[in-house]
Image 1: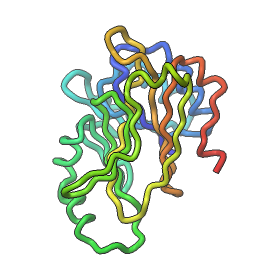
Image 2: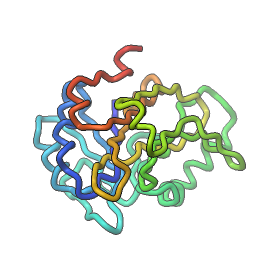
Image 3: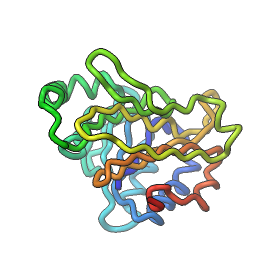
Image 4: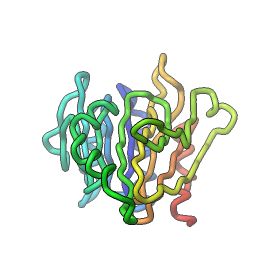
Length: 210
């Protein structure tokens, strides 16, 4: 499994809870999709052997040479692309995305474009003319349900945009902690929204229950 997190900005207090949650679920691969202070994520690399960090940087935060991979746009797997914005991901991988779309359906794994920047968790089926929003959790809903988890099956031969949302409680930003988990073998994505980092101490991933 792969964890996606983005837009922590200067917020750090909740990240140790997040890292403990990932370790408890035996998730060693973490992709950070930009606008994050690198210092807490350096600690992630040191927590135990075999940790992986795919680090997307942008104009506000620096590269991280010690990460597993670091760049403005990255390829996590054959059909998993990472960037801070949708435009950066599409521009850097446009040939591969175009080739995928042109091929006839053949039971291929879905192509996933994962990005941050918007702060709002969402999953979109991406089409050349019309895109379909499958999931969105706008600011405010977290107050009605302290923990929200949504599990989505990603169809074969389909392009998706996945935005984990912001993981921050900074003043002036949306006060919620959001992240996503990808099960690349079973083509599943779990979207998670929390009101407090303490929620992570008792949270169990829905991916373990299917």
